[in-house]
Image (tube, rainbow over all chains, first blue to last red; front, side, top):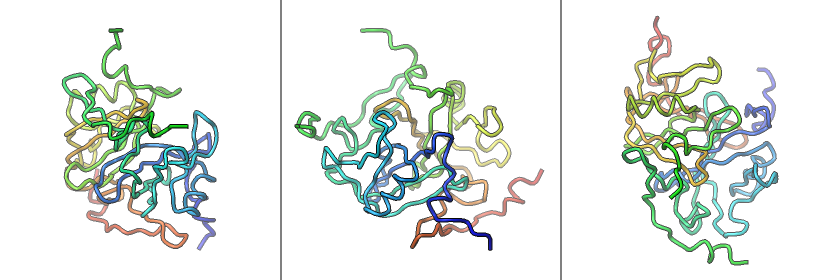
Amino acid sequence: MPDLGKWFDQVRWDEHGLAPVVTQDAASGRVLTVAWMNREALEETARRGEAVYWSRSRKRLWHKGEESGHVQKVREMRLDCDADAILLRVEQTGGIACHTGRESCFFRKLDNGRWVSTDPVKKDPALIYKK
Amino acid sequence: MPDLGKWFDQVRWDEHGLAPVVTQDAASGRVLTVAWMNREALEETARRGEAVYWSRSRKRLWHKGEESGHVQKVREMRLDCDADAILLRVEQTGGIACHTGRESCFFRKLDNGRWVSTDPVKKDPALIYKK
């Protein structure tokens, strides 16, 4: 058997050292968000048992929920056939994954050639990020 | 109201003109695959009502199932809060999304520091791609 390296080295990181991550509510199956990880974020996620992403806009590790409290407790981590995409199945604290205060970031649905918002705001973002 | 352009122009395509797409089984909620679309793939998907991706390896439009017959009938298309990721909820023909003959491309689960295959091969790829 060849030495395949550590599990986090088996991910095929892209030219920026990143891989897309799909995060799904383990109970409802709802897809909550798509985010990005680098190797360090993946290791941190495994170490903490909570989702840690790489924020491409802020260019730093981002422990999801660090400001909002809406952390994502990881129940399962999966890797796809090409080893270039990751799936997290999580328990979503507060039932809110989106910075808009909605359950899921995918709150818009294509309807007759328009993206229509289908999900209610569960909590006002001004109350979520009240620092 | 500003003219926001057509619905497919409202997607924030990346520097390569692409966006990641999560495809989920509409019935079971299982995440089947992560793929990529450009604007043309998205328009084609809407026109056909079946998933059409951009194959980054083959550098061409890829009508999912064109060889295997495992087309994905689109039941719903969603866009995320940042408008840079797309979610398809589909009916998966044959119950097989992965080129390995498995239901989902995410057939490996992290288990004690190893990626362990958890899903059976439902059909031998040699029989799926028998041309």
